[in-house]
Image (cartoon, rainbow, N blue to C red; front, side):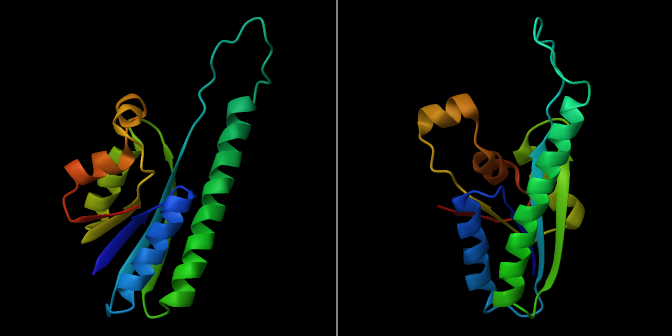
Length: 149
């Protein structure tokens, strides 16, 4: 079974990793891919304020470093609790679209059998204004999705 776990470092994504480990305790020959997608800060005109020329590059580096730390923490937890699984990880910069659609793209490319995501538990109005990654994944995934609250 190929399981893609999409995480963002929140408590909800940590619970998703824990739930995946609980499930995998009973699954032999499983492959797990831990995925974290970080967003870029595009330079914006902020006159009359001066922004350093390399500000967006520095922001991207810091966001990528943070995403790598999140993935490393998750992979350590999974390896400790499920040492029999084949484990890979990936950090990717979001260059267009939404995080949810990028997760779907990665799922299709890797041919995952299951996606595991955490849910922030936002209400209707928050989802309406901010969007919901888990909603996008549930409605567009080519395979089953486990949403961990």
